[in-house]
Image (tube, rainbow, N blue to C red; front, side, top):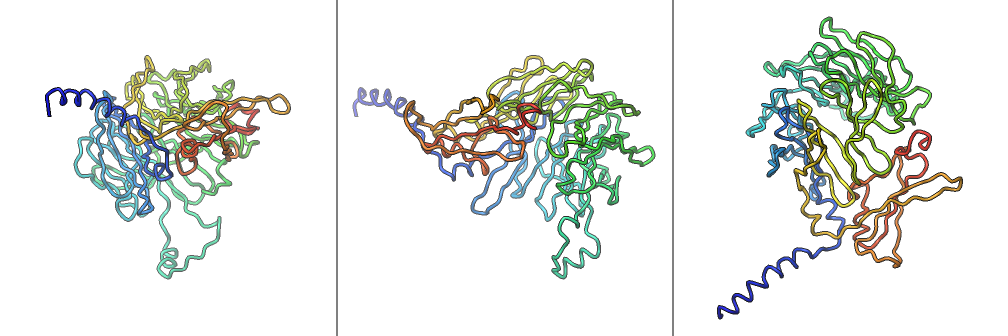
Amino acid sequence: MTTRRILVLLLFLPVAFVHAQVQKRTMTLEDIFALKSVSDPQLSPDGRWVAYVVTEVDLKAGETNSDVWLAPAAGGEAIRLTTSKKSDSSPRWSPDGKRIAFLSAREEKTQIFLISPSGGEAEKLTDHKTAPSSIEWSPDGKKILFTAPDPPTEQEEKKKKEKDDAFRFDQEFKMSHLWVIDVATKKSTQLTRGNDYTVSQPRWSPDGTNIVFVTNPTPRADDGSLTDVWVYSFADSSAKKLTTNDGPDTSPLWSPDGGTIAYLSRPGNLVSVGLQHLYLLPVSGGTPKNISAHFDASISNMRWSLDGSRIYFTSSQSVTSHLYSIDIKTGKVIQHTTGAFVLSSPSFSRDGKWVAFTQQSEQQAPELYIAPTNSWKPTKLTSTNPLLDSLKLGRADVMRWKSYDGLEIEGLVLYPADYQQGKAYPLLVYGHGGPTGAYVRTFPASWGNAGQFYASNGWVVFYPNFRGSTNYGEKFMQ
């Protein structure tokens, strides 16, 4: 081969390579199951690392598996921290950032394990009779708080051995209670007990002397709105009920000085439907104060600012979800992020200068992002699903129309990947449940929503947010 012919080939090789790279194919149902999901970001106390969970499906085994990963906040390659063939989840940093506690199903029952962020073997911390959940480190890093269902009684163990599986539906269930384990000695202590209530959402007070938590009368779905906020005191080993509202009281959160508890609540006359507002309650007692009465939208994922003057939260409005904050004195709400996407699960560094979160849209599956809180300019940290770069995906628009009485309704329209204006296409309509659900700009390629599969294969997919949808204010929802 002559030198001239070699040079000609070299000139055309990059062009051919680029052309091959941009060739995209139609999405299959198998592609949906091949996608990995990113969730539960946890920013390290010093803001240098983000622990998070990656979940994937094994179709042959008919199982899902999740592992804990670490992403450097400054950017760079993510590191897989756990490699168990069973589910590893709920990573939680110790206050000094030297260890990560997580839940693992690698043995017969889910237990709490500890691992160094630099890697190595995970150490089993608990050997509990039932599966722990809702883990949280004490402020001094010496203990870990968790909830766990009550263990089987002797009679229940006997029935199990005899393979007697008859039970009274909606009457025989297990209450969950508070436990705390000493990390050094691995000794567990039960803090609450009995059949008067079941416990969830526990949080340490800033000084580690109290725990705030939520109770339900039973684990039944019908009792889901009958929640109350309680406080457990280590001083006298007592639990005291703080709220007396007939409706739900949930998501309690200590102020930085430990003097106030923020929580979500709504009146008891709305048994199953209604927006929850943000209340403040002095720990010493008093009347709860509704500070979000004029904010006609959902509130979740709350976090106090370092100086205690504001509370950050996420809210879904229309078809997006963003990060907001509210001034606890004036009730003024500020929206910190904007754009055609859904932001979820914000996690702040100890100094409050950085926030990690997941972000997704119709053409991007959830990925990990980080942003400084003084500018809110996000940086993408992960690219978990390169498979999407090879697939034809549809784009989405918001559609609005007037109902019979003039009320404006809206929804999302996902167009075919090769959409041509004026051409007719088959239409598939997704109707949400809830009953107060709502379609937002999440990535529509999952077990419950295969929209991108249909769009990739030439369909129009329509997601109407009809009356009753939750993201348009309480009146619209009612």
